[in-house]
Amino acid sequence: MKSINPFNRNAKQKIALMTVFLLLLFFSAFAQEGQDEIDFIPVPIEEVLLKGREVPGVSFVYSVSLPQGVDAYSYALRPSSQTNTWVTDTLQYYTDVKALQDSVYSHYEVSGDIQAFLFDEMISEEGLQSYFDNLVRNELYIIEEDRVEDDTKVGELIILGNKMHFKPFYRLKIQILSDIRMIILISFLAFFVFAAIVLVIVIFIIKTKKRNKDVLVKRFKDLCYEPLSNLLFEKSLEEIQEMTKGDIAAVLPKNLMDNSLFNDVLIQEIISLNKNMKGDFKQKLKLIYRKLDLDKHTIQKLSSKRWDIITTGIVEINEMDVLEAEELVNKFINHDNFYIRSNAVATLLNISGDSNLKVLANQKYPLSKWQQMIYYRIIRYTKDNRNVSLLLESENQSVRVFGIKLIRYLGLVDQLEVLNMRYAESTDPEKIEMLRCFNMFGYVDSLEVVYADLKSDNIPLVTEAITLIQNIGEKISLTILFELSQLTNEFDIKKAAMKAIFHLDPIVFEEYYGHTENDLELRISRHLKDPVLNNV
Image (tube, rainbow, N blue to C red):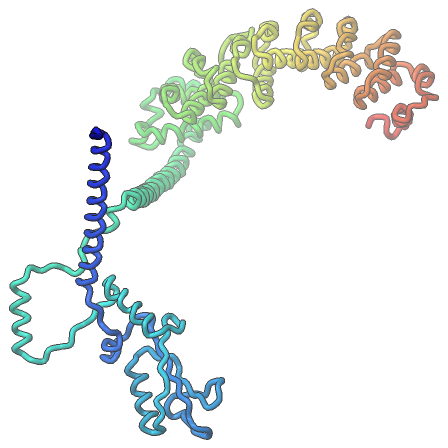
């Protein structure tokens, strides 16, 4: 007797259950498909067309063969390319085509053919019926029932309709809100529309305020002209000193001294007059400025968070010499804003008693050429005892370069020895300025430290050193310059070296380059000897 394997028995049971499941699934799908087919009852398209209804995309063309010599234009027919064949244009309604066919048949006893077209493409009757069934099945075409003329039937339909709960043919819902992408898109559009409206409102408000401010400024200027003129030309300096704030305010328009904008306009007018006046008039203006406590209004601007207001306050302190504001201005000398920083340093150079120029030496930001020009003008006309040695020790390279420039511009010959001692350890930009100082004052002691820089890779530094040697060089300088001109491949250096030799000793120059075979040296030599091109 064979033994029964329990594993084989379980496998067979699983296969049987799976087979039953697949059969049930197949029959359920078939039954569902059959149910769908049972639910849909096809309607012949010809019945619909004979009722004079139009089917989307469907059109008809009628063609008929008539005896030769027959004129069928009266039937809206036209001859085709085939012999004795007449056709119609494309017609949308089947009833029109049938009526034309009946008319032609009754007159000529020839029926002709009716050809259907789907979107201008010829289609058979089966294909047309299949297309119509798809339209009806997908509810893209609604077959309307014939109107019932019987009042009794109409009444029965109304009663039956009232008993049924209303259910719309299409479910009314907002499809847009069901898509998250559409919601996000609409949200962005709404946000941008809202932002645009807010922006327009803000721009309108800002322009309105600016226009109103401009009108007030113009009006306040007109109100300041006459009182300031009367105080300057009708009152002496002693009389203004004896006047109180109330006396001076009485000359000005009433109830405007508490207006911040009026005080700003008044300060600007006083500063404008102060720049164009001299002598007692300047003292009168500063006295009026102090008497009206406008200096306090200026100092308050330093507490503003707007950089332009702070800058305006610093400029006013500088113009009106508000010495008590020195400590407040000192906080802005290393401000990250260029305009605040520049005006703060300029103001301290003007109003402080700092002869060592510490405010410049402590600068952390590089000095621009515009700043150097402003600071030089202040230092030149306001400082009697100028000590630039502290600038040369600054950690800021641009400050050190500016200090060397001051030595040259102000003629501080006593500082040349200091520059000569610092030359070897200085940077290239500093060396260039030092060489210009040595050249300007003819400082011969600098030659020993300058020769070493002729081997530098910095072309401007080398050319500047050659220019110095050209003016204060010695006999040994000729040999050094000749070796440099032979070793270098840089045109500017070669030309500068040959020019220096030519100026130091034309005879030696002729010995060196008079019969040279180097084409470049020959052309430079001719250029230097030409009196017209000598300084070019």
